[in-house]
Every structure is written in C-alpha cells, then in structure tokens.
Amino acid sequence: MKIKSADFVMSNSDVAKCPNEPIPEYAFIGRSNVGKSSLINMLTEKKSLAKTSGRPGKTQLINHFKINGNWFLVDLPGYGYARVSKRDKNIFQKYITNYFLQRQQLVCSFVLIDIRHEPQKVDMEFMQWLGEHAIPFAIIFTKADKLKTQAIERQVDHYIKELLSGAWEEAPQHFVTSSSKRIGRDEVLGYIDAINLDFFEANKK
Ligand code: GTP
Ligand code: MG
Image (spheres, rainbow, N blue to C red):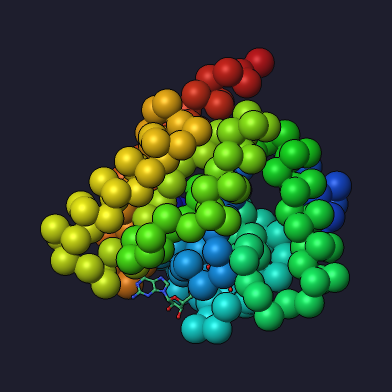
C-alpha cells in the first residue's frame, strides 16, 4: 500500500469524543517506550507525525491520524509506566479500557513487544484481556535492529511458544519490525490493506 497522506486529526482522553467517521481503525498499544509512536512515523514516512521520546510516558492521549483519507492509525499511551501516580494510572487505564471496549470501528489492535525482552506478564495479561473481549489483535515485535537474524528468530520462536503454552491455541499473526531500519513496513501495511479491503467490501451500500 502506498501512503499518499497522513494527517493528525485530534487527541483526547474520551472515546465518545473520538472522530465518528465509520472508517477502519488500527490502534498501537504496548509498554511505554516500546516504539509505538516511532512505528507510526516509520509506516507513514513522516518523521514527526507522532511524538516520540527516549523517556517513557511520552504519549498521553488517544491520538488519531487519518491515512489516505479513508482509515485511521491511533497512537495510544503505553502501559506499565511506573512513574505516573497510582491515581493517574487508574484514570489512564479506564479511558484506554473504554477505548478498546467501545470503539466500534477498531478492526485490529497491534500489540507491540520489544523483541529483546523475555515475555512479560503485563503483555500476556493484556492480550488475554483482548481475547476475552473478542478484540482482534496482531503482535508487532519492535527494535529488530538491535539483534542479529538468528537471535530475532530465537526470540520470536520463544515468544510464540510461550503464548501457545498458555491461553492460546493458535499463534496470533505477528510481524518483526525496526523503525530505525525500516524493517517490516511492507508486511504491516499489506496486512492493513487486506483488512481495509474486507471492511470496505462488507460495508458497501
Ligand atoms: P510512549 O509514548 O512513552 O509509551 O513510548 P512509545 O512506545 O511511543 O515509544 P517511542 O516511539 O517514543 O520510542 C521510544 C524510544 O525507542 C525512542 O528513543 C526511539 O528512538 C526508540 N525506538 C523506537 N523504535 C525503535 C527501533 O525500531 N529501533 C531502535 N533502535 N530504537 C527505537
Ligand atoms: Mg508514544
């Protein structure tokens, strides 16, 4: 898929105030600092579309970006960021939870996982929660530039085995990416394109 346009639409913390156009939407979620905002910039080839930072906790709101005039990418805050207060954490979790439960046009969530890390409980629990609520998701491994090919394969195999030994009977769709080396761009955009086509076909009047 070719990206012809990518524009910031709005930021807010209330799912009811998100744009109400019935076009397909893809959300990026995962631990703080995993590379959600960087991946959005890599996919859209716009260096500063989503705000990034070396320090965790940069993205704080639900941010909508309209792509090619007919679908949305959504940048979300990270979970598991220890430095926000407990009260802020609860508020944050509530509006993110509401977003996932109420957003009708959300056709796929991408759960981002740092490819260097061992499977983490918070990610496993989040994917389990998505599964329990029948919210479709795919896994995107990030920062693949930090590992050699063999180590990438080892980490992915290990992660998928861990999922299959737990609640999952089938491995979720997964992608290996690097925002700095532009790895995985065609694969992720191709996946989105296929879902978009199904969406537009099903919603034809
Ligand atoms: P929050 O908004 O705080 O939840 O973080 P985020 O998940 O949006 O992460 P962000 O994109 O801001 O990136 C965090 C840090 O990781 C930045 O220093 C990025 O430069 C770095 N980073 C992101 N993607 C990659 C990648 O593919 N490779 C490498 N080497 N670094 C990356
Ligand atoms: Mg961010």
